[in-house]
Image (tube, rainbow, N blue to C red):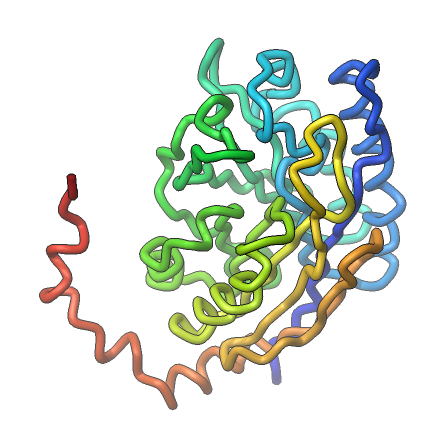
Length: 290
């Protein structure tokens, strides 16, 4: 009997690009916009649903403004609590990326994972934090300190990587070694150099580690920063690097794909990457460099 899992990704634009709106008003508008898409996913039979990076807000990192600290909250906290009933209603596990407040002045870019019965399974904190023009993330986020956890959901073992993490194959490999069958990568990425890499890096992780990847990206532009166009094209890719479903570049959308988790075993029996690894020869990779 095959282990078929229906996955879903939601890509949305910010509905309240208003400089006079409060952080809370923007967060509420973004949250409310997601609800009909979450319902749509549940009614479509999606079993594991992934939301985009910091799903209930804009991508505020092109600027450095302390007001956005007000978006941060405990994880688990109020946003997770509001979504637990949807998980229970549709028996749908969820990957929920939010801005996390650990304590005053300590914030993380985080994704919570809840199971199909609403149980909070844990969280991943983004490990690799960029600090470059248009992406001033170190102003907002501390580097993750939880490693690369994998969460056993009702439907399969789920790992999480967040946006800029995808440029680092080391963590992607660690997720595979930790047992991930599907890795969700919620992102906020704009047209330019990264758009070429978008359809290369994550399929490469899927192939190198023989697991499924689910990559989500928001759409539209977000004043006042106007850092560029978020180009959507959220997608699922299988352990052979084949695209299963891809969203549009412009539209608010639910992207759905069926994943046969038995394919992982089949591919790994063909490509024996885990057998043929040489960790004894990799020590220098972990050494600090100037």
